[in-house]
Image (cartoon, rainbow, N blue to C red; front, top):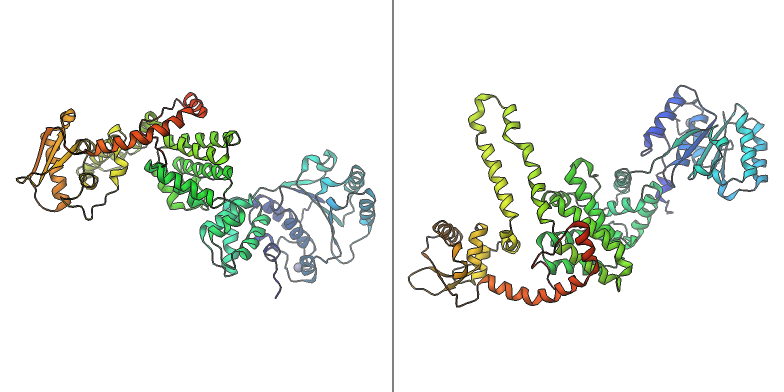
Length: 555
Ligand SMILES: [Zn+2]
């Protein structure tokens, strides 16, 4: 069994099957159905967007034995011969390989003769801008006084190289690059029909690489099918294309959200290991940030074919818009400076560390609050009849507390929150290390501060006895003590007796332990960061500051 390449097998045979170029098709269909057909058409556009495909369908429409119409039958001998490329009255010329004036003259000498069996003699001249000046003159002469039985279908990727005298005699159609959705939609249709399994990421990767050209998309699909031994998986496809694993980029963004230097550097290392080009890795990050920013502006702006849509929307919801913008700028600078780095890997890693280091603290709050006024009670109450006013009462309260929570989460007290927010409540007993207990407790930021600066001590008359570092004595009050007691009772499911006294903890408090760790690691990391000239550039460009304690060494 011979394998027919997809681009040929799936070449649309009629206007209805054509993907995209609706504006061109509509004009041609109207012209054909009203029998007002110009004698010369010029189709422009980049490669693989359907210029010659449309021209071939048009020549079928003109020569179908069933009559001129926008729906050639596809089964008569004229239609099938055109499909098979052996119709005598369709003269196809690739001007790129036929630039000698004699060739064109010879070609145009025959124009005066009537078609041998069709209704029209159709000249399809591809890459018409490649014709020499003399050939143009020969063509022009024919275009000026075309015999009624001749139609010219010209195609070019470079209309600017055509003389105005030719342009002015043609009906010009400019074909658009195909969108990623149009290409991935067609790829999906083909894969389903060919019964080839695929994941969404692989189709997206191919559609992206096709860069607006359906023909390129189908050729890449051909390659991917043979590369993947009949099944399309995103890892295989990114391998084949030499592009970046989109999951790796999402891992980087996850690590940034968690402010976790270790997982960030691990994500970078894994992207590098898969064989990505350093600049391409940054490009992939830039593209993802662009998608996130679009989704934050309006979810409708994000194309269906964006990779891992659930994850994208999650990032869009959770990342402050100011962070996304700053990440984009930092990545852009990182890409620009890549050739200047001692080696590309260093440049990439420094960019990643910069992403971790800079946070637009001041800007993040207004952005978080920005969407809230839209749901203000006023807007709600306008739509509600007066009788339901009691039932809507709670709504403003919920809104208000949501704002409060958001604001407090963004406060400096939340700086220790990321690690503690991931609760591992299983297996936490009263005998567990105090740090683990603190991490498992559902408590407000200030109570968390209190706990972080306290240590546990043995006391036979109390279930839990804490010594709070007296330098943080101002954190202790009755309300916070009660909140902590309730949180512990909720964690362990029983009433407990709690004592908190001020003093000098005999063991390290979680805060002290953390500070020791940070101090040693941070010294090395911050020294490196501060040496970087780009840091100064960023500080000047964005008014950014290095967040104390946010720089962490990998080791
Ligand atoms: Zn036909």
